[in-house]
Image 1 (cartoon, helix red, strand yellow):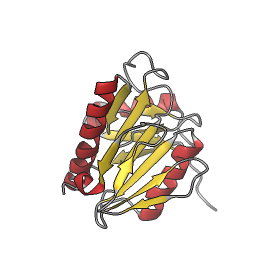
Image 2 (image 1 turned 90 degrees about the vertical axis):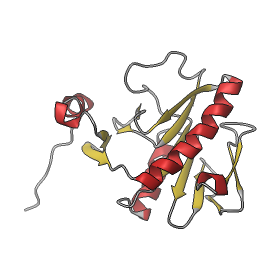
Image 3 (image 1 turned 60 degrees about the horizontal axis):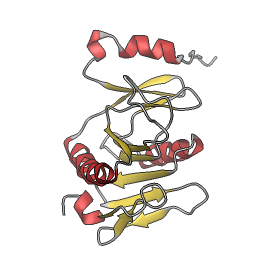
Image 4 (image 1 turned 180 degrees about the horizontal axis):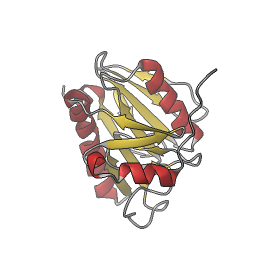
Length: 183
């Protein structure tokens, strides 16, 4: 007989996330289960490289908000996801929320950490798109490439000598892939 576990509701997740022993952790709610995002130096450095460039671009154009891994977003299915970097247009989120954003971001960036699998990371990109995220960047430090996901488009693979673009989500934004990896 298989053991069945009850899926947590968002309210039950908040109770767990707000416990003192979880105050220093980044927790996500994925398919009713609490998942801790494991921190790692190289992925964190890469995320900061990306976030810095996006933040400068967004601030110059007064385009919206940029968050790091502590910035979480409510998904339509009840999940609570915390991308390593995210952008949300100001017209979609005119007021800064006190906790998580009540809607998915426009751009979600996930940097694969040593504890993540390639399949799991790619599944997360597909989930983001199914929740209405307009663009997802998956960053793979070990192999130094980036996969770009957008609804209705083929996956774009960018290598170290190419440029990543903000597309329709951040028109005019570009970043050299080598700079993502500290090049």
